[in-house]
Image 1 (cartoon, helix red, strand yellow):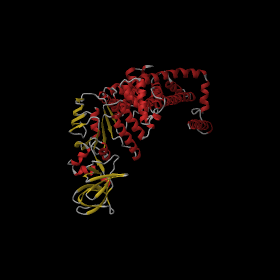
Image 2 (cartoon, chains in turn brown, cyan):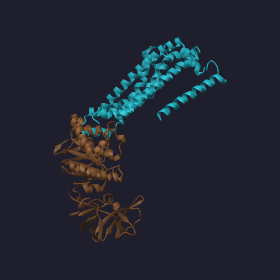
Image 3 (cartoon, chains in turn purple, red):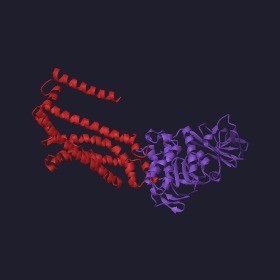
Image 4 (cartoon, helix red, strand yellow):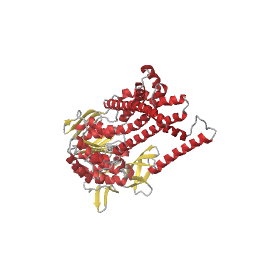
Length: 335
Length: 261
């Protein structure tokens, strides 16, 4: 279990934050750019100075240098060691911890095999694709069998197809890792689908911490909802061969989920899943509009029951009735 | 491709020599003070000239290499030590100022301070030529080391000394090599100038002697020896750089030398 009781981090946005990341599970730190997510990871890793306290299994590690914390950190850019081959990158942590030659060889090759990187063992980082570099960085982090795995935006910089494939590998690795992992992302979908524990950071402060489905009960400012999306309580959920959907009042919303949807009470509808269009099958009343550059941020109301937050380039005015298409929702569930 | 490049380089030199020969023989420019290259080449068949050239070349080479080696060793050692102790910011402004001063500007001052010492003066001039840029380059290389790679190495369990050895030093070296290449050539030039203005031995001295006796073919022979030396130096250092780049940034010798396949 990791406990963070931060008061401040010098020169960084991060302010007072207190949270406990459950042992052996995946915590997702969610927030927009500049919310302080990376700084929080660096504080836990011990490579950023801070005021406050970080505890691993109840033991303060504030005076423990990073090389004795037994954590692994995968930065956003992967940051493979440029002067080492793929093999040596993955082996580095084991070697500096004094592992023997045979043990290093065995562990590194088993990881390279698991991540389908064997053929790249002798290659250097600048010859790797983005996806390969991410896999090497993950293998390097797992090689030392840390008590805590820290992942900073592991899917950033990858095109959609590669990101989807790497996400599956990453989630498999985290599941088989069976220790505490902290993943930083600004992807709401990744966060609510994968997290056992969610920490929502906004402007350096924690706006929500707890299980993903609990965010449906949290009081969040409109500004946050315009980024996060609308959190909606659903009436019922159904699934069948090739489909999953939720019903809210008389509206049916397709759900994105790789798992069953039984027991789901809340869903998130991201702002980009809502389209204002004449052919929309949902009638909604615009209750609030905020102009944001060339876009309009609007709060709309469906049947006086559901409040949705959307961003649209189409001009909308307060009080008018418009038509919407709700393309998908993402179920919130406990793990 | 490499063969084509080499042929191109040889062709350009050949064109230059032919043009020079033509201008020096068949145009109004032709006169005893502008000898053609064939006349310059003939000077190398003169045993006495060759002996004089070899002795003086030896002086210049020893002075340039000694000063450069001292500057290189001191610059890298001090740069690494200061960076490791976090003191580089104190020294960097001074290193920057010294870096900006042309190395030949030190020669008049050194003559005043040291007198005309046949070895100490040019070696010190060569040292002052290479030391500040190498120190500046080393400090800069350390300052621009990839912070995130350093952090990852620390988190993986490497102690600061290991991070220095495994991550920072190899990367800093890659950034220092271009500085070293430039200063190796510059140290020859500095020694040549110091020999011209103050000393009684070395290629610079020889050049001044032939200039005063209007032996232009011999003077051009000395200059061409200096030019060929510089060319060989650049070529040699390019090969060293290529080997290191291959080793650290994409070759196979690194992985073979360690646990790799």
